[in-house]
Length: 113
Length: 109
Image (tube, rainbow over all chains, first blue to last red):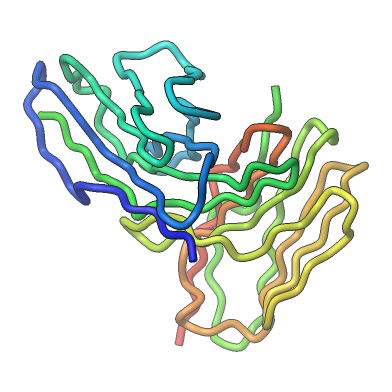
């Protein structure tokens, strides 16, 4: 069966420090991969999605970047964190059909201080 | 741009009462609609997925309906239990998922 791993679960970083969040998927090949951010009391905001290795689409201009070095690996990065980058980050994958069902990781709570 | 709205934002009911959660969306050209459950500080768990050609889906005590032409979906939870307390999110897929802000449900024992 398919599983999605996301780590770390929590992270506290100082302003200006770098960031790397990793997500891996098992049990499927060539999935669509997504990074979402959830601010407190608000809906999920799509940050990046990827339909294949090296293919990244950005939904909103921001201080973050994403990479997909392998088929089932998706990385969210920043060179210098801002206070506004704090939030709950979720990785997700979708079945590659037009009836895509989404599966989410357990999330990373990022606090930038 | 697809906009998804969930009403109410919060709901508190006594155990045993049926729950009705509403979701509306602005663009009816969708592939499917998915309902998720989120516990505090956790990821999302998929509850039900309704294809655009379907009118409803059922799983145990959960039933979700879809009226694509009017841009509405409703999640019904029968005979609520304290374990149903969580935030419920609606997501519309029109190639990309657009989420509502969720309805936070509290079931009182």
